Amino acid sequence: MAKKEIIYYQVPDEYWHRLHFVRPRFKSNIESVLLYMANECCRIPKLSCEEYSRRYFEAIRMFPGNIDMADKTLHNWRTEIPALFGFYKENKEIGVTETSEMAKFLHVNQDLTQFLRLFLFSFQFPGGHMKPKDLKEIIYHNIRFKPARTIVQVLMEGNRILSQTNSEKEMTISAEEATYCIFNDIRVTSGLVSVDEVARTILYNRKNRIKYYNPNDRKTLSLAGTPRTKGDMTRYAGDILDYMEIANLLEKRNGYFSLKGNELKVLSVFAEDDTWFDGYESFYGKENIETSELAKVEPSWFEYVNNSMNPQLFKTDLRSVIGKDTEIDVIFDERIKDVVMSDDKTTKDIGNLGEAIICGHEKMRLKINGYEGFIRFVQIVDSPTYHPGFDIDSFEADGTEDHRYIEVKTTISKRKIQMYGFHMSPNEWRVAGTIKEHYYIYRLMLSETDKILFVLRNPVSLYKNDMIEAEPRDGMEITFSTDNFKPTKLLVWKK
Image (cartoon, rainbow, N blue to C red; front, side, top):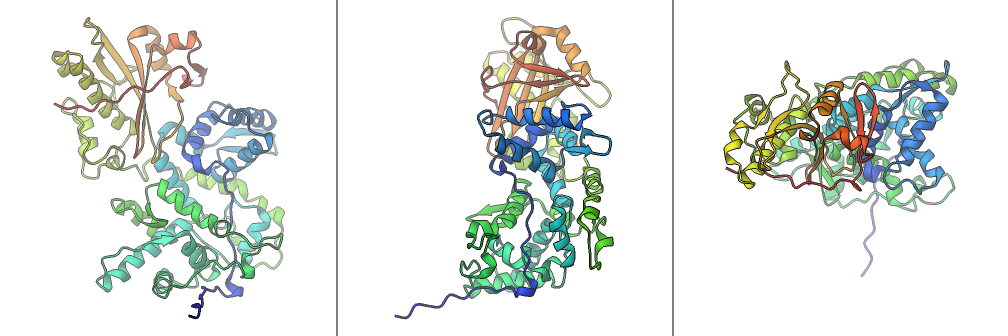
């Protein structure tokens, strides 16, 4: 029996251009690394470029698991984080480096999902995340491309096409399809073909079992002249798809990505996005572009990205983190009830969600310990107009009627993270020193798969006894280790 001939999808040579960008070595642990590095960058004041670089490098070395890594690997981290995420701004003319608004935004808001959405919203080709020589190629090919926007549009258009055929399937896309049908096709990245055509091409190729990766195609050849692997060919489109999944824009099943079903509002913002960094527009149409001139645009690019950190845009859906069936008793605080039970289920402040969860935890802790009579007195006391230095007034449940004053520090991410630092305001640190053993920090880390709680009692004493690290910066930057603290079981309120 004759072997069936394999048909490969072909992008004509004149339309083929392989897009690429910085790929962080820490991509498999990107959420933990970004939170940690944002926290560490916010510890570093404005310094000379040399001193900032030294402290930044030492922070990378101290990330869990990095202490024994080769300097070359750590130096790769040092260049990759600012190139892609712009966590600091380096002014070489005056020799000064300072932490960027992007790092401060993530450190203050502690919402990785929102941060990555904002990152994807502004990410484009051309952009300052690319080397000048690569920017030249992008501009010569007339490429103007926002990957996340295009992927959302293609998936939406695919769903529309499928619905017209009464299909119950939803449109999906793989890294291979995104690579060959979108990323590496100038007709798409320069806007010569519509997203409708892209979606129809993908569906047609599937129906006719057309393949993509062909190791014998000269387009797969590396600079060394050897064929790239399938993973190497699809890694850049795959990175964007992975970032979109972490940002809760897409969900992944068996290597295929589809639109996140409960994020229609956010997806519509991406699909209708018309924002654009135009710092490179003056170079289009020029025959001879100097890379030195392109390099001068880079500070403007990162200024644009930093200014895109809008705290009101892309807030995380609470139910995607805490689960639709999670019971939170919020009857004692209408402010928290409004946040958790509102129609759009979107928090104005991640801290409010943490407070609601810990409020339920405290009432359950009192109930388990036989202090049900105290439950009705547990309350969230922090408010927009009143800041006592802690969030929740609870009770010790130790045979006394002593109060337990709790400050909740909450972080939201899609995946489990390993980042144990947090910031305490000057007032919180002062009150902690006054209340002493009755002052608690509840460090709450929420993801789709885990809800992890660490309890730190009397943080000022812990610092004095070298159990935690504290560095002054408009209050205190606190870091603790799992060598000294173990997770506390997070209790769910049940009446």
